[in-house]
Length: 241
Image (cartoon, rainbow, N blue to C red; front, side):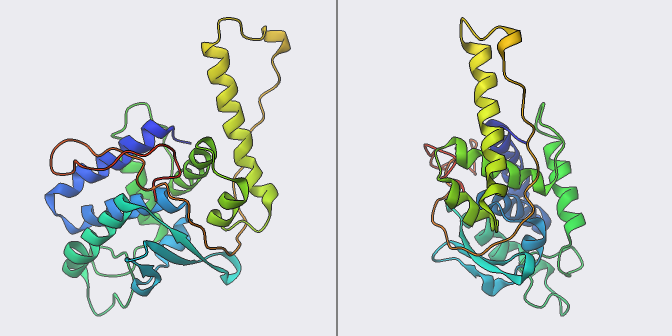
């Protein structure tokens, strides 16, 4: 899982790379922004069609496990990245085989999960000390950052499309353990080693549900200097989507 500063750095790397107007780099930025902003699964991302996006309302309709649909919001940075891709990137790659797919490969076909994983791995390699994660790591990070920012557990359940609240509660364990570690490192009189409670390990989210939610991770990150500057900072992880 990424720390918030690592997630910010990853998205900044994607933004800087997209400044060359290469359509694939514009696509990569849009994919990463949307993955982190919405917490959707990679299978949901690659399955998106253009009419699943409501660019005015900044929401996306996704079809999850069991063909259940839900509507998920995203914030201004993701909206800007998606707009740049749809207006300046996608038209350069579209072919007769593209149909309505939002995200395309260089040959104009719908992008597949393997390609998205490669993009995440490649861009994360430019973030110092960041763990090597795939798209699910961004989903995991988004959920944890929402909870760390004070988001309601049931809201996060709806955002992720979990059928069971108990699946979403996995992320509360991660957030609590990170808080405990920070306390033990910073407090002048932490618990002695023999009294510290054992670490609980977080599992992966796997269930789907249906919901429309309104909390937004998207505007959290400040943009880097230069052409990509101007991104308004937020006060919690709930502002980037």
